[in-house]
Each structure stands twice: as structure tokens, then as C-alpha cells.
Length: 464
Image 1 (cartoon, one colour):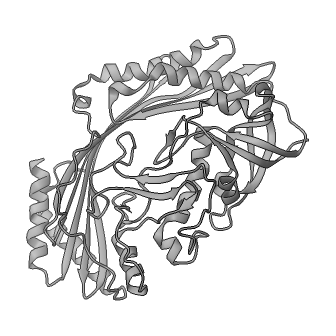
Image 2 (cartoon, rainbow, N blue to C red; image 1 turned 180 degrees about the vertical axis):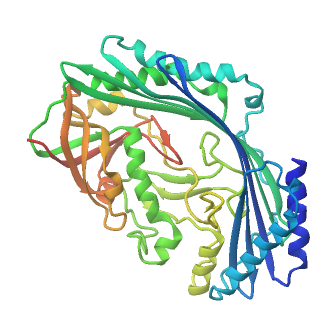
Image 3 (cartoon, rainbow, N blue to C red; image 1 turned 120 degrees about the vertical axis):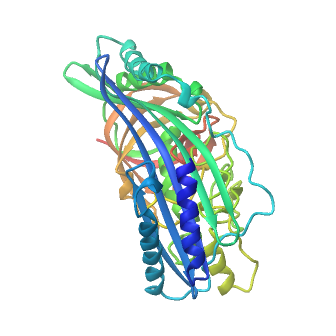
């Protein structure tokens, strides 16, 4: 820690001597532990440390950027490191000179109130013995096999992973803030075989706190999913009501998130442009982005440029209520509009040390409803439960049209009849969210995007 602060102090001394208008230092340090079990033995075990430092330089309304990563956890102990810092800062200054002037560039001010203390750091994680963490991976594998030792033939990628990280942000406006965060996760893939047929099931769990991981539940779930896919059949082509499981609904929602970003709206690449105040989606849907959501993996007291995180309403009972902004895109909107003033929603995101911050989502999700899964099933007289989709990356986020391979279950009068496979589901992303007629209570996140299970009035299914 002392080495890190010494490095930052060196950088500050260099920056303060430069003839520039402003600067920002972003420092990221983390330690990682990964273990994977195979056949009850440790297949891989990796530990690593990572440190990265990025600079943004503002000069004559031009923004420059540079970064470096350290293989040595004590970079300040290296000889001539001050010279390396000076080179990096000069690189950022030169990159600013190569860009066009833009009055919308600026840095975050010091917040009026101190950012909140959030439950995102597990103080016990470093103290837990490695042996106990290794046992998590082994237990995960055992739990998957225990569902059916005869038909669960293989278990792949039974892994436990953790990260402990500290983020530090300093700028020339006087902002200086650090926060710690942890994440622990488990994931596993089970393979079921019967009568020459092979199917896979996957599941995971993630939490800021080690004690909250439910390893046995994850393993058994992956095993059951694999078994439940055996014996899949095709169904006749037709238009059917569809119940989309929460993890699949989250994948669809991740593509919809693109349309709420202010840069896409202002560039005319979002169908939501000019739709604020309209009921654009199903009245059953309420969508928020919440950087303060305690169980979200993207939860943080500040965003990527130092603005306080917040909860932002985007859709309220189907009505479009807002967009997501960082400082730059809020400034851009204000400079070109004589209407209401936009402000940052705390949605500046950094995708690693190698890239400058840009507007993005934090914890983006559909508010859960009050229907449990069995109630949603009762409303599905004759239709499909979608358990998995393939090829989501092929969806055009602007047009929203899709045709995707999928698998799941055929339902008749609210009861599962048989698994289905080798079918395709077709429709439009925006129409899908307009046709939601039921919202479950089972909110689940995939990464920074979460959704409950969604009952959709109808979609085209291509089968026999």
C-alpha cells in the first residue's frame, strides 16, 4: 500500500509541473485466486496480482490518455520509475495534441457529500485458508455428480474464483477517493449421457461475500439441467406463448441496455431517441440502473470518473423515463439543447486499465414482479419455456430483429410434457419487451444485467 501511494505521489509531482489544464489518475490493484477441480483432484490453481495506472490529460479542451501495467507489485521500488511515469504523462499530453478540441471534456468535481459505504468488501476473504477455497471447487463437482451418478458422466469447469481489489481515483479538481471491493464466484458444467445422447447443464453463483456462495445448490442445479435436457424433441412450427427463464431474459435485456446509453441516443443509433414520456414497453415492466444495488457485481460508491453512483429510473410501468449519462454525454446534450439540463447519472464505466472511461451500465435490471415460477407456468396453456438461446451476439441492437436457436420445454396446460431442441425462436427485441404479460419474482443477474422470468404473449417458433 505504501508503494502504491508513493507511486501516486510521484505522478502527482510530475503532473503539477506540467503546463496542462487538468489531469486524472486512475489506479487499479487486485489479487486473484482461481482453482478448478476435475475428478476430485485439482486441475488448475492460479494466484496472481495485477496493478495498472491510467492518466487522462486535459489541455486546450483536448483530452489525452495513456496507461501502464506493472508486473512488479512494488513499481516504485524500480530504478528510474519516475522517468517511466514522466514518459507516460508525456504520452498522454501528446495524444491530447492529436485530438480535436471539444468543450464537453471535463473532470468530475469533488462531491458535495461523501460517497456511501457499501457492502461490497469481504474482510474475511484474505484470511480464509486456500484449502477451504479448494474444497469449494471439489464440493461443486461432487454436488453435480450426486444428482445422478449413473447418467452424469462428466463434470467440467468446476471452478472457484475470487478477486480482492482497490480502486483509486484522483483528479486536478481535488477529488481523491479509494474503495475496496471483493467478488467470489463458483461455476460448473455437468454432462449427462443416456442412450447415446449427450446434454450439458451449467450454473453459477457470485457474491461479494464468500459465506454467501451456495456451492451444493449450484452443483445440483447444473446436474439437473443436464438431465432435464435428455430426450429432447422438436415441435411443430407456430406462434406460441413463451416463458423466458430469468437467465435467458437477462441475456436479451443486455442487448436492450445499449439503447439507453446517451451516446447511442445522441448518435441516432437508439430506437428510444425522442421516446421519453411514451409507453414504449409492456406496462408490467419497470427497468432501472442502480450503481448502489447491494448485491450487484457492478456496485461501487463512485463511477469510472468519480461521480457518485446512483439509482436511475429508465422505464416506469412501460413508460420511458430516462437515459444513462456520463459527464461528457451530459455536457454534449446540454450544449446542443435549449431544453431541460442533463446531468451525469453516475454511468461512466471503465472496461479495464487499457481504455479511457465511457458511458455504460452499472447494475441494469428489470424490477421483479410478484409471481413465482409455478404461477407463470399456470398461465402457459400450450407453449414453450426457453431455457437456453444460441447466437444472441448476432442480434442487431438497432433494428432488434432476431432468429436464434433455442432449447427448453414444451408445456401443455401448465405442465411440462417433454424437453425440446433443434428449434429456432424469431421476433424483434423491442416487440418482445412490449409483449410481456407476466413478470416473475425470481430476479437473477448475469454479470451486470438482471431479470426475473418473463411470460411473453407470443413468439414465432420454427420447428418441424
